[in-house]
Image (cartoon, rainbow, N blue to C red):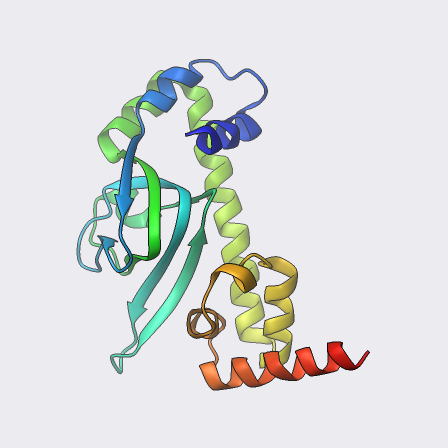
Length: 195
């Protein structure tokens, strides 16, 4: 729980009021590889802080192919915000790629906490703004860059993925085939080794 505490302090300031109360409202949950936090069509009922592990946020394309909408590594927040906030079915599923530990808070507790501890509402807004910025950057990269530049974008913006995430999952995240990703990655290693 220390990483969760540190992240809230980072966003709320050195001595946030009611910090221990806020932390007491999170519940730890462990997921084994392949287990789902929720699936498309269900309501996402919690906001999550990923303590450790790796999550894949995925959806099925119109032709039934599994696509990666997001990858969430440790020390990051996650929720399907629209589903969580409005109580509507999610358009995505969230699955543990490896053993994952999260701290979660359900919607009812979350709403009550935002009213009781206004500073926590500011923390939530900071989380949402960060996720929006991250998503916008990725969408711009996917839509505007070729495969080589997408991989370079990943190296610059998500270097932890290169150590923690499989080639197949990275390729799906970047919107390119696994073969293309591996070929471009291998070509880059060859160039780096020759320098």
